[in-house]
Amino acid sequence: MSPRRFLQRILPQRSLLTEHRRLRFLGERLHDPDLWHLSRRSVAGGLAAGLFVACLPVPFHMLIAVPLALALRVNLPIAALSVWVTNPITMPALLWLEYKLGAWLLGVPANQEHFALTWHWLTETALQIWQPLLLGSLLCATLAAVVTNVSVRMLWRLHLVNRWRNRRARSRPG
Image (cartoon, rainbow, N blue to C red; front, side, top):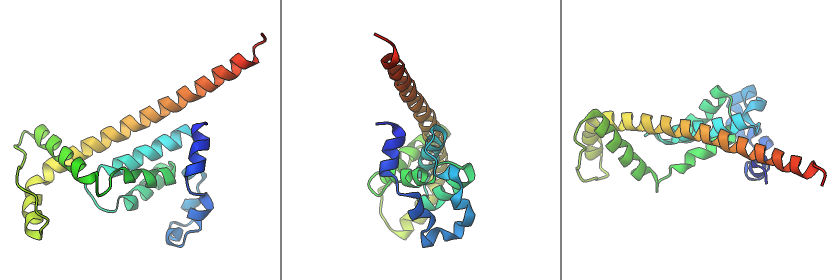
């Protein structure tokens, strides 16, 4: 099955999203065909945009991914859905990795303090870890976006070349 057919089967229909009452504020921008087109560029860009946002240490990733997809004119549903690679289960590990990477890059010792979900812990610790966390998050987000974009484009092209070769081999006589 081609990547395009697979994505057409799993993605929500365009009409469902363009007519959704909570998305009406986007107006005519939501009707841009580039936001719904399943091409190599739009799918790779949508995944890259979504994964970039998913790596950021902010809440409400989808609210950031949608305007980013609009600005970049990449596939909107893919950008919005791909932010869910980070979720309440995967987010703590990702944030820890990003913080450790940022601390290493800045040459500061990583804080080994015990986690406690309290306002005091959050405000005290946030002042100590925000720089390494931000640096690590931006680096991971950029790396995820670039690697995803290049990988999807290469895999899509490889699939098309293989289909072309197979079709050419079938059409040769005998």
